Every structure is written in C-alpha cells, then in structure tokens.
Length: 149
Image 1 (cartoon, rainbow, N blue to C red):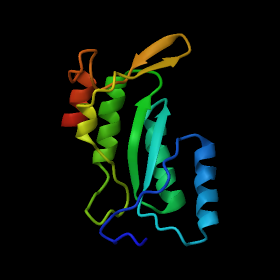
Image 2 (image 1 turned 90 degrees about the horizontal axis):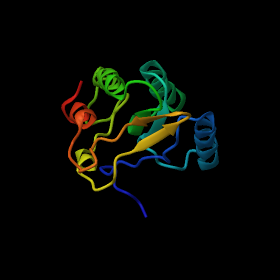
Image 3 (image 1 turned 90 degrees about the vertical axis):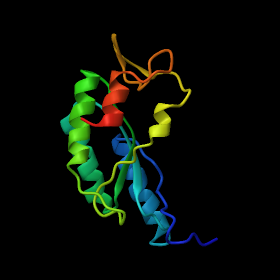
C-alpha cells in the first residue's frame, strides 16, 4: 500500500536511552533506504533541561529527520521549572508545515484524557509530572504546557 505524500509517516518511537539510538540506526540499516520516514517521534525522561535540549539536537543531527517529542518529563527536580525551560527551548526552534528542522508534537487532547496523573518513583522521592490533578482538572504543570512558558 502506498501512503500519499500528504500523510506524514513517523518512524518508530524510541527512548533517550543509548539503546534507542542504536535501535534506530539498526532500523534504518535494515530498511536500506526502502522505508519512508518523514519524522522521528522520541521520548525523553531524565534530569535537567540541558540534557533534554542536547538529546533533541543529537537525535535530529544523527538521523537528519524532524523530531516530534511525544513524551517527556523530568525524573528529578522542579517539574514546573523544567516544563517552563523546556518549552522555552522548543519554542525557540523554527517550525513550518514543511517540517524542516525540529518539531514538537503537542496534543491538547491528551491533557483532557481520563488517564490518571503520572507519578514517577525515583529512589526515595516521588515527582508529580502529570498534567491533571487527581480530579482530572488541569493542574499548574498542565497550564504551563497548554499556555507555554
């Protein structure tokens, strides 16, 4: 089946672990130029905005594809500051409908989903990184995500 060019096809989504990068290298090698991939969806969970920024840039440079950040969250620190700083970085990246460079996929419908808030357990502390509170109302982090930094 041929997919029309007007439909953008994402590659396999991988995490920020080094095995994710190698997996994509192996995927593209196995495709041998025969797989159409218009953009790469990536996931990132880790510490610090600088590490997030670097990962997005590395993935773009490594694969020369537009990047869609489809999941991201800090595993420690101030989630509100992380969201503000991360959105500032993502907002600084040029975007267009032709998808050059880097992109961020923002799906507001996820904010209104019925999924419970996400709680990451990291050693001896918990970090709340969900966009909704326990009653499925948009929380402070969700407001930053929706309205920008």
